[in-house]
Image 1: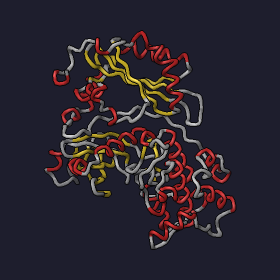
Image 2 (image 1 turned 90 degrees about the horizontal axis):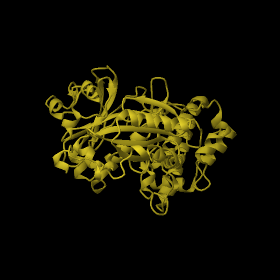
Image 3 (image 1 turned 60 degrees about the vertical axis):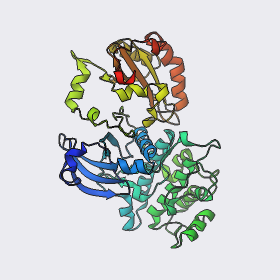
Image 4 (image 1 turned 120 degrees about the vertical axis):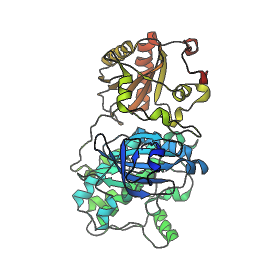
Length: 466
């Protein structure tokens, strides 16, 4: 489902029928219904300021609370923040009211890849291009510790230029969910695309499961039908478990060998992402995707029983003016919810980042000194620096298995005399990030850090969180 998330002042729009013709947060004019599920509806909408088309996924808060899916929605937001890639549907913003959660997402005009396959098999070059872009997206997700677990043509969209956009991360998992045995155990996926080890219910490597699904997709693109098919689901599962499939005569020997590696029933010997990218059939005409990961701008909006709509209703101009004083960037002030999230005793940070891909410290230094120090550190290690207001991005040039290391730092105002600096890994290898923090970042920022945050002046903190 190609959707995006946005929040609303539901009171404004719900008074007009749900939702076509109405406005969400006085910013999005809602159009036709694109699709719906048990807990959400997806609408086409238009940003009335920029005239940009978006997709808005509207989630019923009461329903997800009733069935205990709050953590699931939080995880989906966290995952979508991690996977900003040209071949993945982008999440623009998340907002909420007392009753609704809104995902505002990129609107993808070209429809589902499934619709192309439904008309018949594709030409080899077209199938290869789609498969290359799919693997680029999947490789990026895996490098960021995200596993889709429900890859199929219906979840692959095409933009107006015919480029792949992977969507629907509702069943996705992250590396932090791996059990002590190093495997996942949740039974999920779509029957015809599910890997045999998932059917065995003994635990599975989610990266290898995604690769199997990619293999089924490639077969479908080239053949126009499924490799494992039976009207009886249990009979189909038996075929999958045994790996019983036959390539049609128009498949080249090279493609047949490639598919045999992709649809290997033994996950230990199944082809890996790096081996896929080195495969001769795959490499033909392949272009590596190079892009810059923008800093995230999502808000804290999903918490049981609390309405943050008042925090979310500022206009863009108000936010911008609040960030600037005398022409200099000013850090965003933190609301009570943000400040609580910094407390280890009441940690809500899992709402956005699950895992150890970030560092946080407190400083009494002015913003310009913090930014200057970050620039000095970047210069020592030959990183490129990008700045925008109180956000700084440090981009490495060293290519690795997971691409160059990209680090984002953002400065927040805790009190008029106190700043919080969050540093996060946006791309690249986690161990490389940790090494950078240990050897470069912490020593370089040592003079700006307050050794004991509890000793800092807290007289300006809101009284409700003292």
